[in-house]
Image (cartoon, rainbow, N blue to C red; front, side, top):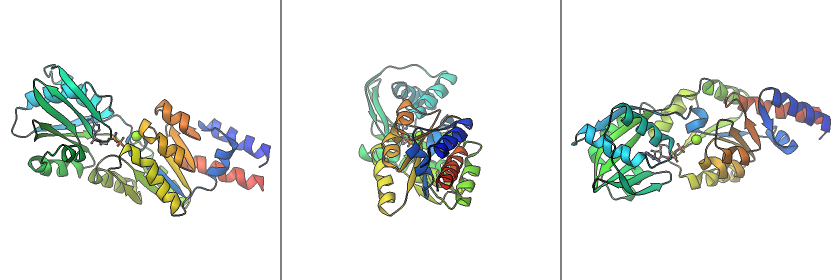
Length: 291
Ligand code: ADP
Ligand code: MG
């Protein structure tokens, strides 16, 4: 590698807010054939908002107060959105005790002596709670691309909350540009299959790997590598850090968490998905100059 080419490539990137941390990162960018994108916070803005709150067989205000009490204890972005919604609706503030966070699933707590769980289908299944009473609502909401979260009180599913997270304006153009460069595009998310499929089809993404637990994201990258692919992983969350480290090239969204930024080989300061194909193009141009 000629130092001049590396300097030019690094400079070109920096001008666009694409920070290559090392010369190796720049060179690896030239050889990527598969880009794996996290959904929440990477393809979407990561600012979810509650669009629907459905109580089934229970008073809506009462349920909202129970849910908000649990979510106030959680640090998850979905939890923050639920709390904002509850506050806007003037929900009664209740105390939660025995709070537990279940990564990739949801959370639970005791509120006014009732056992409240808020999270995905996996959480309910793990708790032995039947999801049939709300499964129609869950599927209808997920089919629109919204994240459907279930609520159970004392072992019964009694609610569904739908949250929408706007897709970043340039996400589709980024996928198109990657395809034009003959790069396969994969979405990797902890969100449910139907929600992920809907957003993937809007963005023309080839492959969807959904309902992946935070600790399993790196293993999914490893599987792709084992099948001979040279993989770049793009992510923003604490959840994504092991996958960013495992990938041949880890790319962090600048607006993401410190852990993701520290782990990545490349940082996109403008948090713009279009900078992913641009980073790979700069890598290719650099390597061409080196020959
Ligand atoms: P992602 O990979 O999309 O960032 P996570 O792995 O953090 O998502 O969570 C996966 C799923 O678990 C979420 O889509 C949601 O259904 C559920 N979940 C996790 N934490 C919470 C919470 N505090 N409240 C509601 N749902 C939650
Ligand atoms: Mg994310």
